[in-house]
Image (cartoon, rainbow, N blue to C red):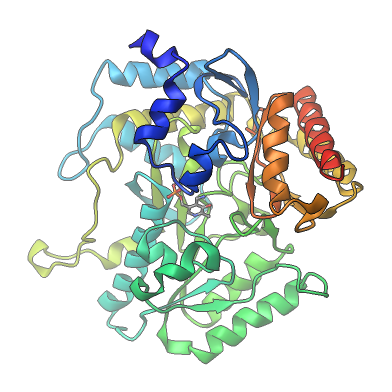
Length: 445
Ligand code: PMP
């Protein structure tokens, strides 16, 4: 098997049997924009392909790797758990790893959050948040509160409920017939021919939506501080606080989806910390296992949790659960990930690197064809002129070209995304900057 896994026909076999997510398979099969990379191992912030070539994992294996690959503490925790049991259920039973993971999350979560409901991916955790909110109001006797307010350009995952509160047409529009209605408040995206809307305008936009739907809103759901999949759109300081205050004033719930922004990505453990906000429901995923294993969480206040209490036959409990919810291997990885945050003082270690990345952003900003460079912490978007260098997909080409310099990146439309592991070093930031700048310059020629 080891031998088969390393044969050069692996890519050909892939092309015969796999259907890749978010991938135009015609391009993939046709080696457009280049032949696929086949990653066989990882080490720290690096990926290694079948030929032994090393690549900086500047996409954090889809925004989830936090402390690097094969981190000894997380490796050991998963191995130790494997020696005990790989899977047992949280439906009617419990296990130490789930308890410890929930405790570890609550220890760092904003004050007031008290209950951790596990799922396996971000979208599922969003579905749970939506169901929790809807059912909370039903159980309170406010059955008209069935409407969700989301943001323009929102992305909360690919399942039908998550898509219903999504706002990225290219991902979501085709599924319209399957979706439930939601209303959208303004995003911070730069307006055509204008500037970026300010904090007060954005909050006022949210207020107009809440005012118009006053008693029907079950919850407002936002990606706090940075809308990732929208192309790394950043909200001004104080916006999340403004939305929190509006939710209080209009008596509705605030759900913050930190699947992408959580676990240090924006420089704070959670993006809501920038504004000192506690949401009613916090949605977590991606980085919570260090990027090792699928685990997500919907974290609620005790008030929400308690609304679901009653005799079993009353049927008030939350009718939701997945086979692998709170899987022990994933939960063990989560506990170890949180341990590493503490032991290595990850957030403090990141600070000088956040500065280094800011410097790198200014360098990239100066390049011809770069429309905008924006970001917060380790979430950075480099927007290129559409059709730059007569290339219909310039950002994709940049991501392809940086591979020659040993860097893996992934674009979102015209935006080249930098999303390095929290453990990226100064010299790796330099490599990322130089490789990206060289690839952008090459588009002009
Ligand atoms: N919410 C946000 C903000 C996300 O960025 C993502 C994924 N990028 C999701 C939800 C969905 O997570 P998953 O891919 O694990 O379902």
